[in-house]
Figure 1: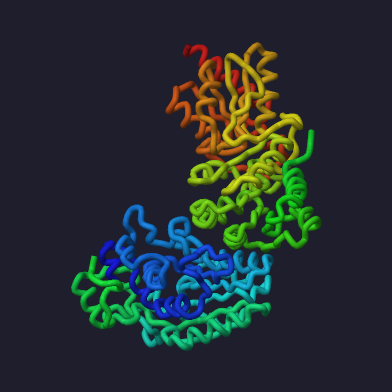
Figure 2: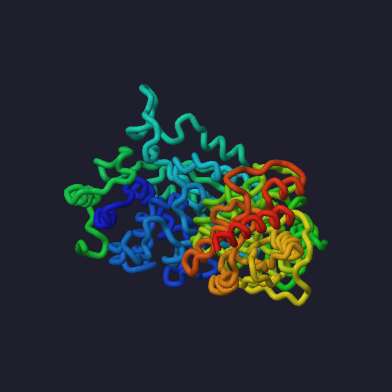
Length: 274
Length: 314
């Protein structure tokens, strides 16, 4: 929130819903070497919901890919931390994303290539629940199953809201103040029908995330890709943002940043405010 | 007549595959049209059928390229430059991915497919895309050289392939150089600038004009980006009329490119021949070339007309 407030633009809700997933991935799941981002045997992670870039950057910084202080350059000219992930600027990014629906395809290419090269890497791609509205996602879902890519895992951050979406009809259950992007859609059934293994977890339960990812990795030699549907809360951890669609891409005021910091019980990583 | 570019493309890739173990072909279920099926037979393990899903195919190619593979894509041009344009833009061009787009069935002459499949805007779209190399070879020999160059050179390439065979322009000693503009015929009155198979038609048109006493040169532009603008300007400087001709809309393709160069470097009287603000249709090749003024006879007629107007204006 600090970085976005500092920049004056960016996304808040999605990064917060994905934060526990990202932390678990980068600190417990992914086999990576932050000081050697080009290590050929590394696991690959692609943030297909590229608008949550700031969340990814924070976790990458804490994991040691770059100095935490560099987060203050988010969105600034010449920054490696672009509004949407730019692999040509920041080592450690496996794809450039931001146009929704595309990350899974790149993940398929990597998983396929890794298998042809005999590399034991696993490729994880994080999508948003709203992102599954993109047609290209379903091209990828179909092709991944056809190629039997057990070494590919899609994590879907099901935070229950999208940027605007639809008003929630009276009486319909939902977790946010607008209609769930997947309302009326049985995503689990759909993915299974396309030939995927599907796991469902609480996307804020670190142990569950790690276990599901381990399960997915163990299936890596199999012939079915895995989807992990992670139920999350948009704006997680910040009471006034949780479940509120307007925080998809809102900039916090100074007071809101202070309040959020208090609620999260954290100071800005690395020390004082820039 | 010589081999059609799609045959040359496939055969060259088969030839290159032995020395380039990372070369792959990804197909969007058009292999029997694009001739990628030949590669599939020769190298079944390096041919990846991606199904009827071009957007995903471009993404998969990008992922493969990050592992050092050289993916060549097989589909019709329209499905790249229109359906998958965002994927090419964001995933390929913006990351300078080493992905090669084998764009088959370009321009008007696409085998009775009609306007849905006639890509007459591809050069404008791909040329506008930062970092994209845009090639439109003029004959089989140049096509083979371009495929070899693109495979050996890192970075995204859009290769505009014609469906049907055209006359030979070059001999076996031809060497492809990106950006080079190639003088096919000298001429002191008019310079016709063209690309792809249209260059052979312009050569024929120049012959017709020569018989009528008008000296018309032909400059072939196989590489729309990069392009040697000073050389193009030099060729255009001494003539009274510059003409562009292309199997493409007159907006933003070769005509647009030449207008930009002349506009910046030394305005000349310019006639752009190509698809005007309209769509094609399914029809025999000869009909389409006549209808859109691209046959040698129509080009010659139009050039002579314009030249006499230019001469009157001084």
